[in-house]
Length: 246
Picture (cartoon, rainbow, N blue to C red):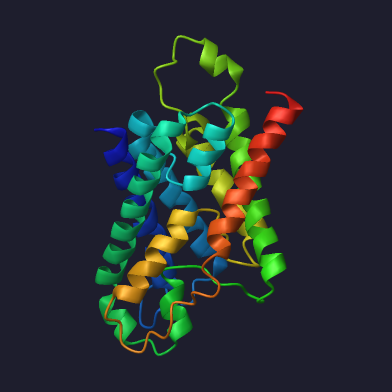
């Protein structure tokens, strides 16, 4: 499997599990209706676990433009590969979100609240304060990227394992799942912790395109925050890693 295909498949699986758990919790007449935030954060964390298991050996399992850019800023990943990885992540996120919608299509019909329907696809703030919302996405992504960077230390580059791709997979599927889980539990209450531009923007586009009855708008006035916030947070993490000494 090529790295491009691995990023598509890994991100698709991540979004299928993530969008799926949100649908299971918030849409009417599902088995998991009302399961709450612990169920949602656990589902997303295990979705990352699955994505990393599948994509890790082939692409490093970035699954997130912020990871690709953060690694490239520190010289751990080639800049010329960044666009292809990001394209794969956006395609995968769209496929995963679409599949989750197809599986829960009947439950969308049983749900009247347009905000809950949109929540299956993308994030929204608990309290709309753009300054705080951007900061929340920055900090959450900073935590993700700084841990990933320190998990791919200098010894990895000087070992005989140089051929292994670097990404979330370098941290390990189980540790990265716990990392995403704690970010959601601790920092996700303000914005829903996108911490991944592809995870939010690509499914938001799918939401806009799908023929979902009474779905409302796709909240484009907020859509820039889950893109800009993670990219700034990843950049700060990368420069902090360089400044503190790798």
